Amino acid sequence: SKTGDQIELDIFAHRKAGGIPFEHPVVTQARHAMEQLEIEPRLAPSTSELAAFIDHQIPALTLGITTGEQQHNQLESIQIEPIFRGLAQIIGTLISLDQHYKTLQHESAKLD
Image (tube, rainbow, N blue to C red; front, side):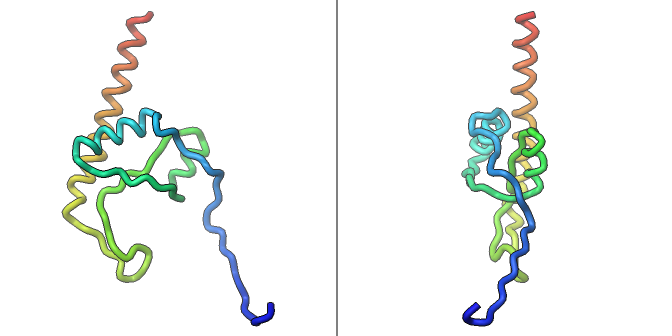
């Protein structure tokens, strides 16, 4: 190079763009639980362990349980207070999904 600088590229994750649609039951039930808890959804793409599920056609999404500051550096911190509502969000999502699938099973049984 003209400046003598060297650039190094480390690829730490690679996956095809994708995810699950907004109308997927996992998303709609998570949003329902968030609405009940007055949690504002933050929609953003991310690279995480969920990529492995998505790549294998297993629907998945990230539910954050708190907020923080100065992410990814030595002064990173999280808020403790929101964790309780965040955990309630996860439990509410699981309960909502369970009820959704029980309703589908019940309706399917009626058709048989």
